[in-house]
Amino acid sequence: MANDTLSVTDNRTGKKFELKIENGCVRAMEFRQMKVDAEDFGLMTYDPAFLNTANCKSAITFIDGDKGILEYRGYPIDQLADKSTHLETAYLLMNGELPNKTQLDEFTNKITLHTYVHENIKQFMDGFRYDAHPMSMLASTVAALSSFYPEARQVRNKEVRRHQMMRLIAKMPTLAAFSYRHSQGLPYIYPNNDLSYTENFLTMVKSIGKPNWRPHPALVRALDVLFILHADHEQNCSTTSVRVVGSSEVDPYSACAGGITALYGPLHGGANEAVLRMLREIGDKKNVPEFIAKVKDKDGDKKLMGFGHRVYKNYDPRAKVIKKACDEVFEVTGKNPLIDIAVELERIALQDDYFVQRKLYPNVDFYSGLIYEAMGFPMEFFTCLFAIPRTVGWVTQFEEMITDNEQKIARPRQIFTGSKKRDYVAMDKR
Ligand code: SDX
Image 1 (cartoon, helix red, strand yellow):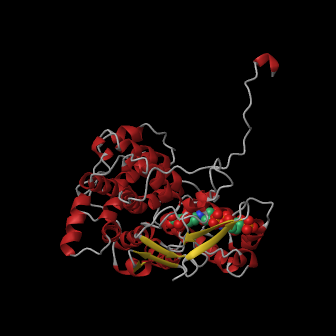
Image 2 (image 1 turned 60 degrees about the vertical axis):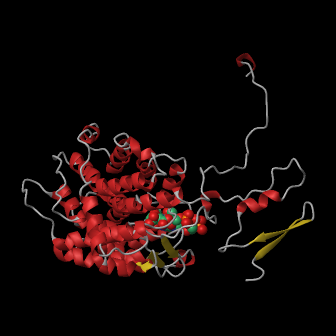
Image 3 (image 1 turned 180 degrees about the horizontal axis):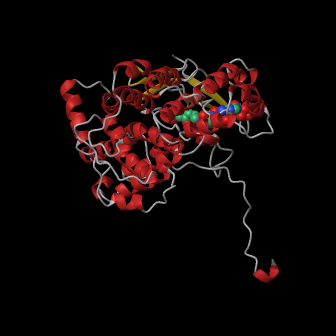
C-alpha cells in the first residue's frame, strides 16, 4: 500500500519520523535514531519473552493462531498426518518441496545408514544413574556427539552441514532408545537397517529376547503420525534456543542440545509428561470440577497442563489429529482409562469462562501422553518422543538461520535497573 509507513512524533524533541512497515513489522533499529541529544543511545523496544517480536524471516512453517492453522512449507498439517510419513515430511521441511520416489528413497537410505552411534556413547549412557531423566541423558549425549564430528564446526559448508543434519535426525531415535533401555536396566538394541525409521525406533525400545519381534503396524503408524505433528512449529522456545545458540556458529549438535534442554521444561515439551501426572492426580471424572476450581484459584499454582498456547488462541490443529489417533491406538492397546478424565476436563474447560476468556484450548501435549502411555512408555520418556521428531525442525531452522544474510550472533540489549556506580567498601567498613 502507498502509505506503508508509521508516522512517529518524539514528543521529547518534537521530531517526526516516518518508519517503513514491512511484512506487518517495523524494524526495531528504526527507533535508535530517536534521541534527545547526541549523547543519547537512542530508543530501544522492550519485549520480555518476545511476545511481540519477530526475530527472523522464515519460510518453513506457517501458523495462524486465531484460525488454528498449521502448514509445513504450505501443506496443511492434517493432510500430511493423513497422507505422509515422518521422513517424507522431514525431506519437505528441509528442502521445501515434497520428494519424488527417487529423492525419498535416497533420503531414507542416507538416514538409515547413519542410525548407529559411536560405541563410546554407550559409556556416557552407562555413567548415568538408573533413574536419570531420559531428557537429561539425551541432552548430554547429543552435546557429546559434537566431539565425535569435529568437522561439524564448518557450519557454512553446506555439504558438511547437511551431513550433520542427517546424522542428528538419524541418531536421535537411537540415543533416545538407548536412554530408555538404560533406565530399564536392559541391554541396548542396535538399529536394524531393514526397518523403517519409526519401526526401527520402537524395535530398539521394546524388543526383549525375541530378535524377530516387531511392533504392531498400527502403533508404528500412530507414532509416525505423532512424529509428523511434532516435526516443527516455527519459533517456539526450543527452536528459538537452537537459533540463538547456533547464531554463535557453534556446531548443530551443540545447538540442538540447547533445544533439547529448552524442550525439557514443563511449560514446553515437558507438558506431555505433566498432563499425565495431572490426570493421575485427578484420578476420576468426578474430581474434575474440584480440580478446575483449583486451576481458577489465582492464589493457587495449578495450571491445566496441555491447555493454552502462546500462538494458538483456537484449538491446536495437532491436538485434533492426536485425539483421533487415540482411538486407533486404543483398538490395539486397550483404552487408556485416563482419556475419560481428559475428555471431561476438555468438555468443562471449553465452556468455562475462565478458559474461554483467555482462549485456552487443548494443545499438542494434551492427548499425546495418553497414546505414549498406552504404548507402554513411562511418563519420563514422553518428552524424548517429542525431541526425536522436533530434531527435523531444529536442524532445518538452524540451517535457515545460518544461511540468512540478515542474521548475526544473537545479543539482545537490556534495561539496566541495578545500582549506579559506587566505590569498593573495605571489609571493616561493611
Ligand atoms: C508446547 O510455542 C510453541 O509452539 C510450543 C509448542 C511446540 O510445538 O513447540 O506448541 C509445544 O510447548 C505447547 C505448550 C505446552 N505447555 C503446556 O501445556 C503448559 C500449560 N500451558 C501454559 O503454561 C501456557 O498456556 C503456555 C506456556 C503454553 C503459554 O503461556 P503464555 O502464552 O505466556 O500465556 P500466559 O501464561 O500469559 O497465560 C495467559 C493467561 C494467564 O492468566 P491471567 O494472568 O491473564 O489471569 O492464561 C492463563 C495464565 O495464568 N493460563 C492458564 C494456562 N495457560 C495460560 N491457566 C491455567 N492453565 C493453563 N494451562
